[in-house]
Length: 233
Image 1 (tube, rainbow, N blue to C red):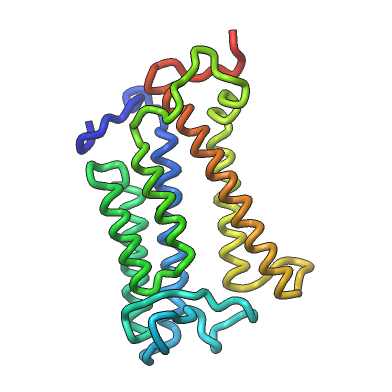
Image 2: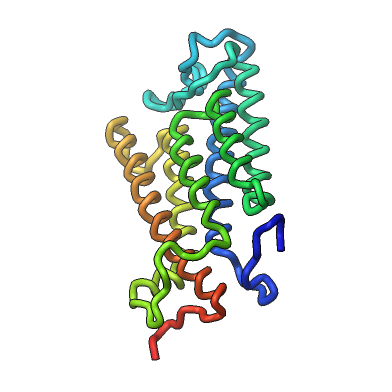
């Protein structure tokens, strides 16, 4: 037992796929918060123009659309940046180490809300919500009862979830790089760069959702001691 939650398959060295995905989504939130906080701090000990700010100021901006909008209740760029980075580090640590603890989901949601309020970025709210929902499914029964003979799609997803998650991580890194630096080989038009950035995020979201479904099927197989076979008998 771990803080009130069982860890199925742990004695067999099995990976909990749902936990891995929840932790990864939490790290996404933390890295984005670090990114926003870093550039906010670079703007110095100056007042913010209001509660909605551009995390990347004109002096640090690498392309016209690279502004990274954020919300903050702290009326100072330096203080906002420091707080955002501090909370972002806490989120990364919590996501990696404690997301599956008894109150792990609730604490993560609170940290995510705090990050939003201190300049950690607007778009991260979607990842906070998704991570919270996924973390609630750690060591829980699958949403859809497992069939005695799973479909080919279920078997494929149960085996492919780590690769789907890895591809999503790559696309996240691509989107983050474009959002900050606006660099894509052979592309210079800001509208096209923005389209590539949003397309990367859209495809990443689809891959994450598929990975969640696959990890749920995988975990259900481990929990029932009946891993999904590659080929049905």
